[in-house]
Image (cartoon, rainbow, N blue to C red; front, side, top):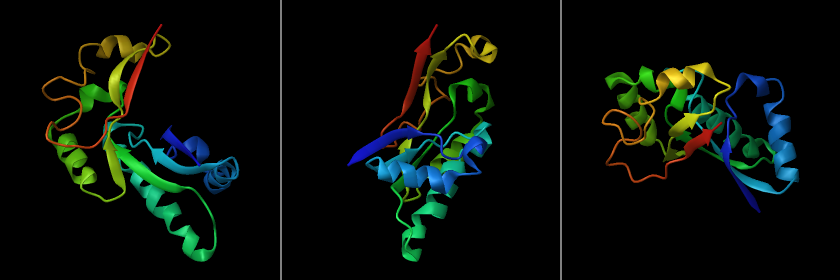
Length: 147
């Protein structure tokens, strides 16, 4: 059985066929999916958890889908949005049983996205207010790419 360790299931582009997509994943041998919780803005990082809760309940109705877990974090492009409220939201989400990782974090210098160049220096996973809360033991899904 395969594990998809980085899926953006909460993306709007999947809203029309999310269940069918998950069925196809199971048919292809994917038994577990980690839904990366970053949202379109930092405050939307709970979307992956919502998707997990929506679809993990379907087996009770006879629908077979992969087991879903979530992460909670801030996409590198959105690092400038991190403040005390966002850090508190991360901590709150990390306390949820379905949230098994903290991230996506990283150094995303892919030049196709102009915001990346303006955010350089703010998206470091080791910055004092960036990345995962230091005391949290969960894995860190990271984003690292360049031109």
